[in-house]
Image (cartoon, rainbow, N blue to C red):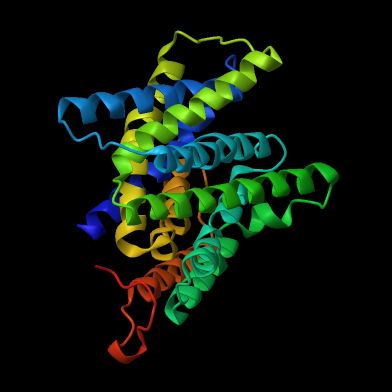
Length: 300
């Protein structure tokens, strides 16, 4: 079950980059994010009500969902989409893949979970692999003010993503399932961003064409309803640090999609990077020996 959820997350999020690119145009970035998560939240609520699986939440649960919505379904996407104006998407993917290590460190800080050596080693190999994959793009960037600003936004987006992981893990420890917390979190995030758009005078435009509507529906249903539910379920089952290794793998899917849609060329360093990422993946999923488990999170 864990493997199925893992592969599903990688395949879905690895193909959302193309859909995100198709969103850019007439509709402002924050408005597109509002459309995406408002629709995804409503769909989740409809599913939960029809199946009678909507869990009741107290004040504490709603406050955590509010924070999760701000981190995971609002600021996170604003940072990454804004960063794409100054740095290339490949460089953003490299920064985002550091979520593996941020999650391990945050799990240590907030939940006192010991960081397993294989998680750190696997994450380091994955980052090395991605560095090789994107080396030509990385080497072509100078340290201009715009580049540094873009890197700062990408890092902030990654930290927000990791914080959202911790909040989801906290909710699941309290017995709340991801579908319920995602439904509330998405609506909270969309609502906060909508208020920002209204107060800033950003118009709620719409492109009524197949490109925009098709990409929006892909981001809403597979990208949000299915992708976030699958990923945050993994966070609860496997721990944030192992679940976040999806963020190292899905850029590989994005590269293969890009090879078909945008003419990406594979090189020898890129292939070496692919091998490093695969080896890192094996290390992350290797169970520690029985005597060395300690407080580390084991796959269950």
